[in-house]
Image 1: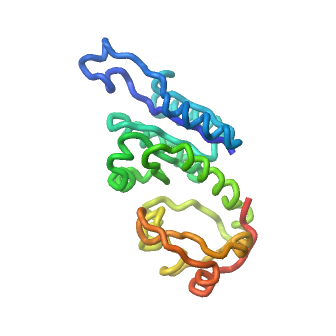
Image 2: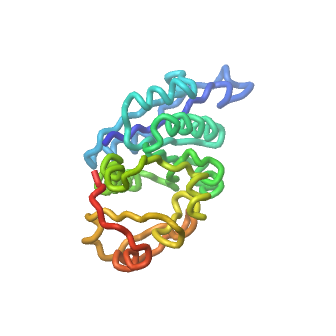
Amino acid sequence: MKIVLVQPPLTLEERYGIKHQSGGETIPLGLLYLASSIRANGYQTMIIDAEILGLNIKTAAEKILSENPGIVGFTAVTISIDNAAAVAEEIKKSRPEIVTVVGGHHLTTIPEETLNRFHQFDIGVIGEGEKTLSDLALVIKEYGFNKDKLRSVSKSKIKIASAEQVLILTGYPAGGVPPFGFKARFYMDKNLKNKNEVYAGGGSTRTLIKTTIKEILKTNKAEIVNISE
């Protein structure tokens, strides 16, 4: 799986305002640290500095998508968070299954407000993200589902729900949906049967519940299937 790390588009005028003529670009050291750590854990990584490259929202998204990533990680400060979200939205329009992650000073300062406002981001990373991104890549690689297998099992068309659709259909926000408590057809991958305790969505974007596979199966009557990659 490839992880693309992104410095979002930002002009000198946007960054420095009336003093833009005396401003300059800086190397995204934070992304370099992240890339080094992720590569050390065996994942292919690429950095796209849309600011330095002079890309706009559309061309930045196109360049990211051309790399066929599984995860796209954005770093953003307050003046660039809107542009980062706009790029993430373009990515989601073309490839909704790509996991979009945001970190940086803005998210770390107001994490809940950021994720509630920008539904284009799937996950927010508070503080340093070296270990978190590597752990996330491992989870997606090991337990990510195969859409063709799920389509075969469900015998229906598969579509990734938007954050708004998730809330309407389940009553819970995306990222906090528990494995029970609402009307749905539940499937559980056979590889999870060997797990004893698991952590699942706890009803909000900031809570988890600790439960067992046995309890989940008892509650939601899930069908055991083979849908992992």
